[in-house]
Length: 448
Image 1: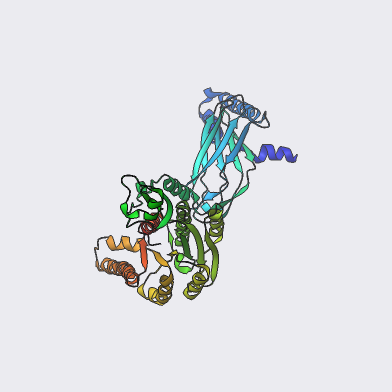
Image 2: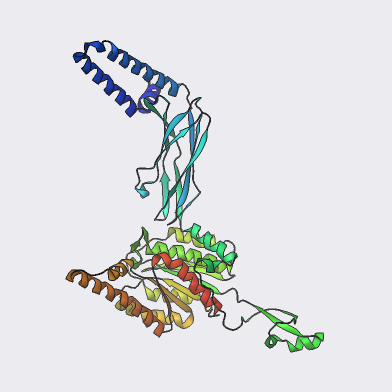
């Protein structure tokens, strides 16, 4: 009895076509009172409708497994990117069917309209693809895949439930990381807005002594080696490698501000992952420090093959905290962790000059021992308000205040430069490109 209930009641759904047929039958019965010549036509019509209804049930329930469906999803999702999800469906019925598919996606997306309609011929299969863009890291739980099948008669739908429950982790944007990784390997970073910097001077990392050939810089002649060999020999130098590159991420309340669904912390995490990947490809050592009111995670700089996965796993677990950053603690952490001069890229946010002044003494101390690059964000909403034309007094007031805050951000850049601290003021969507630009520029100019 329970099996019959589950099979025929819970998974059988009436269609609009059936209700339309019943409506026509009601209309025919009503008209038969006024038009006697209709006779038994309404009765024949309703009997035919019932017969078709029974045939439809037989056609759809004659096979226990009339269709098959399976979700194709990656092992993990990339935060802030479009991730492709596929639903494979196959028809085992000996006739063509109309199919409706519902995929129970995680509640974080707040979508209840993931509904696909298609048709399948007998023994045909299809792959339906759609995109999901998560905006938070963490575990995402997918539910079942539900398939609604309709025969050519189309009076009922039979539902097939496929248990496809699975938990997928959402990691920092590894899709963006792979894109820049491929560009870095193929030296095509400049095609995507990454600047090509003219090198200043020569690199000072010695590689080998080789025979002089036309075009070599005569200033690199090695006279002792030339005297021993009896021919001209030159010193060959290569780009400096194994420099330490640390990404420092502020997890305080200043990084909770959202932009296009992602928080500033998530933008910083995505950019840090990409920068670490590019640094490792350029033979530098990548490290990570997170900080809030107390010390967060510390990953010492290294360039082992497992370093990027270690950084990704740490970033996956990071969350925003709700107090101000303890800059004194950051200074002591950097002094105890970084044993040589390093590039320190500090992702944070300042909304006012007074906020900077409170932290400036500690930033000066860090810049004394390391090459410090401060990365903070433009307020894109204020920028939009400042660019809009004013039509009344209130608009003028709002525009003036917005321009004041935007100008204060530029003053922060000048104030940092006055103390020899480099900075990047960027919109969130351009954060990754601008950060890599600055890293390549500093490396080309041999600042690290």
